Amino acid sequence: MLVTQPRDFQPGNFKFRSTPSGTLPTDNDLVKIITAGIRWTAMVGRADLTESERRAVVQYIKTFSPRFANEKLPSPIIISPEPARRQELVAQGRQLYRDSDCAKCHGERGDGKGISSSELTDDWGWPLPASDLTWRPLKRGSERRDVYLTIASGLNGTSMPAYAAALDGKQIWPLVDYLETLVPDAHKVSARDMLGEEQRGWMILRMQGMAGDGMMGR
Image 1 (cartoon, rainbow, N blue to C red):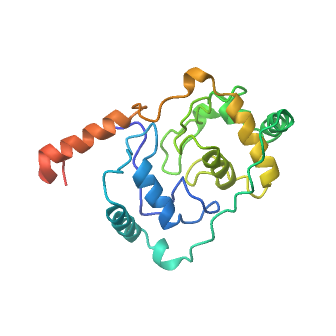
Image 2: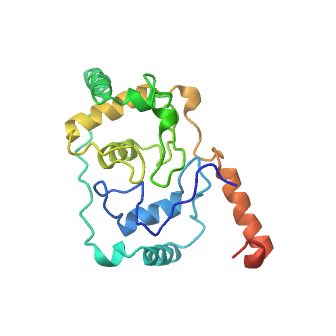
């Protein structure tokens, strides 16, 4: 039923983390995803569950991958202090966008229409074109901190690399500021609106509640 495929938990690869590329997420990273969901996808937020319930789900999810038992959890990425937004920083971010070849996938206007976008796949072979960066919220959310972490940590299992080794915080923040200039007011969507496959995600939950485990093929 879904265009954006559900995460395969067994390899232990999670896109949205506060930890370095290729590493496991923290418990708080997973709690945040369960709470807020991943916007535009059928992974809807479950803030209706209590925090203890959400943390219990996190512990269960971790049993699917042996990595959680066998690997030491790294420290989260340190986010440098957020500077005041200035025009010269936006100009610096525009140059970094070009120098880092972001347009190759995301396009010159950040609309996801770069020359390589249609060729991209995830690690499981599913088509995964580059994100359209001209919308807010993005899958991770609308906060500038979220955009910073995505640039710094990359998205495990996808073609989006981590830039923490190539760019320091004084460079990532200008890039974040430049990306904000690509978002027209009409693309700043209310957090309460249904986006992308979110309505389908809620429909699946309702079907599960009405049909029970047997009819849902479990």
